[in-house]
Amino acid sequence: MGWTDRFRRSPSQRMSKPARDAFRTGSTRVRAADATDVEHLESWTAERHGIEGFVEPRTAVSDVTLLLVAHDGEWTRRRVPTVEWAHQFCNRHQIPSYDAAVVGIPQRMRDYNRRKKEQGR
Image (tube, rainbow, N blue to C red; front, side, top):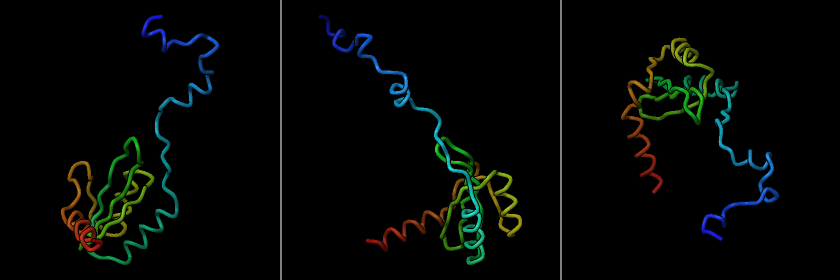
């Protein structure tokens, strides 16, 4: 018996098709935006000022998201139906909106996260 023969299986030992498919990786299922996401964005926007919107494109693990960052760096991120919807939402609320893939995220958000982390220590 050769070294590689240890890993070979006889036809009776092979996995059935359903079990073989269980190990297969495919595209990730992504939860779509819903009314709860929209309500959160609406209420968050109403309670803060100096907000900017950063529209994040769809990726392999998440759908299109809208990142809202307030003047002090506080932020929230929620799924949205489309990139166009996100820009229209920002326009309706008189919030400047940017493509996050182009401009990145603001430094004040990173500073806010650092302050919150230090407060937790």
